[in-house]
Length: 399
Ligand code: NAD
Image 1 (cartoon, helix red, strand yellow):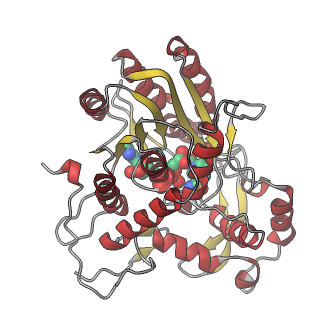
Image 2 (tube, protein in one colour):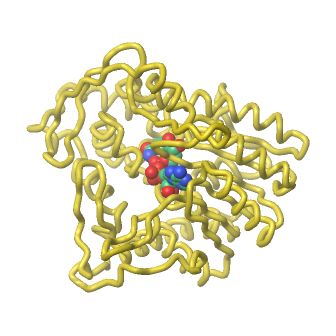
Image 3 (cartoon, rainbow, N blue to C red):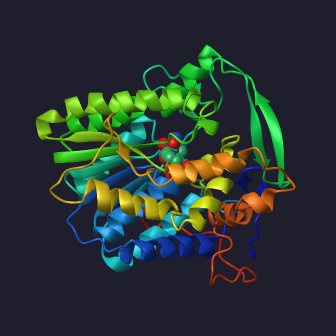
């Protein structure tokens, strides 16, 4: 089948198998050339491993440190002539490359919030690794079923307290619009904390610890975002920000419960990048187009893979000096995004950005390109006019 992008608002409903594999291979090359030489993790579990920051974490672990990895994700294989989701094809590419490199890779496709998937992963760790020394928690999910009650909670991207009105980018129409969002209800706030807070992270770690599947000195890391004041009403001070407060509190609780085995839980604050999750946050996409232009001009631009290389190489596994953290105990790799020179340059033009001045002030083209690349399009060396087999299997999931 010849596969072309079909974009609907902030998702692309098709993805390209060869393109996704090539995109993964590009990221592997970045890691191989990143000068990683220190010792690092050997057996790694990544929860949310098929796209974005989780996939980048899996790639850095496997190709920067030759670690065996187990990746958990929720993706749709190809069916009825429809392409699989990008995360599924990414994992095919990842596992093929891992097999060539001789590093272990096992994948689990299902709902990470469910007890069944947790048990399946625990069995895999026991069978193939014995214990894990690094657990990355990188889920971005719209809903979660509470395993104790069966109740379904939904996450919302809304301001808290007051309505919020700001500019956003309509990527389909290529226009700058203004939208107003009503404040979240108490139920929406609580739902977002249930889905995107730390409760499930703790369930994972408690289960693995109770089954003696965590190595001495285990490290677990979850991802957070703070960003600039212009996005705070919708992000940092909004429903998702409340969930991240819970995530940060959970890191502290987890560090206590892991103290017996010398373990530690950390939150890493990462920079804004184009992922399937971030594309859906109103207003954040416009900010990202400005951020990209300014960071590229200043030679500071990073995508997911460069961010996670820096997180592992320069923060988590930098050597004996210990992991540098801020006053709240968080690891920061958003330091370049938050540089005064970057933020003041964005603030200076924020009010000037309109549909007419989009090309002048933003890197809309770069944003669009990154977005299509998430689905395996616009990747150098891939022939998009060629017929491709869309029904491919993740090797470790073949029945
Ligand atoms: P993403 O959409 O690219 O990836 C989400 C991952 O979660 C995928 O692997 C998906 O399969 C998996 N997933 C979703 N629901 C699942 C379920 N029920 N069971 C199993 N797997 C499931 O998202 P991302 O942007 O990489 O976000 C990952 C984390 O990084 C989030 O905590 C996010 O807040 C944080 N973060 C993102 C940004 C950004 O700009 N994108 C910046 C800083 C921090």
